[in-house]
Image 1: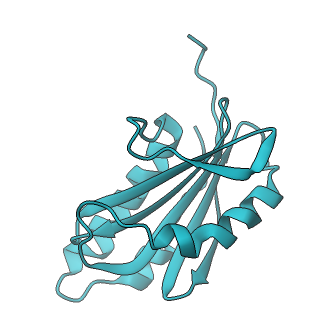
Image 2 (image 1 turned 120 degrees about the horizontal axis):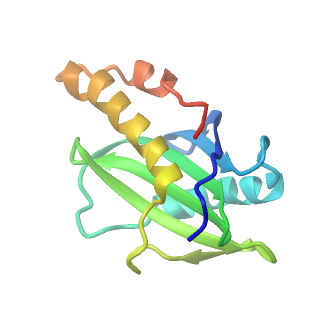
Length: 153
């Protein structure tokens, strides 16, 4: 087992993909996320990834958050969006460091988000509760989208 070391979690940007609004985060062992080409490739793949269906396929608000994590085992790209008002749809891809332009679909193979990725998910969970669910029937999506996380953990 390797000793826990902090990682840099940074809000990167908010952007549009078709009807979707995406909040993007990076996680890195270094101060700066170094994989700009991969980041751009992920953004180009998002229309395809956001169209993926799951077993539930409930209504959603076309709001998602993306986590790109330069981890030990490779770079994980995780796209998440809230369905059925309070459930998180999570789709995970992995890129090897020697093939950063390839994305292996690993959702459904038993792997879930790691401790650093869960920090982003927890922030997004709390923001969703506070700005969307607690304001029903008039959710405050603007405040939710403005709530971001930058931390070293």
